[in-house]
Amino acid sequence: MTRLVAVLGYSAWRGDGLHPICAARLEAARLEAAGADAVLLSGWSRRRHRPAEAELMRAAWSGPDVTLLADGDARTTAGNARAVAAAARELGADEVVVVTSSWHARRARLLVRAALGADVALRVVTPPRSRPPHLVGRELAVLVPARAYAALRRRRREP
Image (cartoon, rainbow, N blue to C red):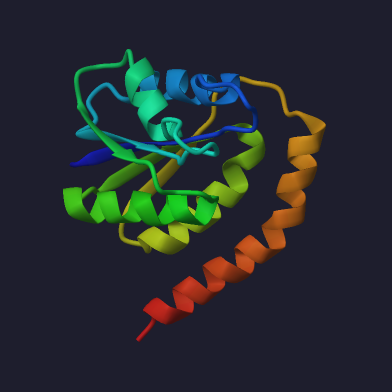
């Protein structure tokens, strides 16, 4: 059994370091990474000439000694999902554990499932955090387009 743990980045501030939401996701991933074959850290840099979220997470990693993969190109959840699916295919993963926030979990699961296909087990893990109302509202607003995107991806894979 090959297991990939994937941490989706988060950055909504002007600071140079890791956002507290992203740090909480990284901590949850640390707890999930025991026995994993690899951990994918996915997220871009919102600011020019600053490290990508993936690189900030790599620098802050305090989990088990596993292969760390960094995807600094994903700008959206759909981009994260494509990176997770590509890493899972490359590793031959049987199971993928996606780590994100509770308010983001539904959309992340939908998009990662669409990118992965049905033959890989998928689990979504969230750190114990609050649900900021403005972020919950944003998720509700983008969920319908995310479902349409996932349906389109599934149709393209069908024979």
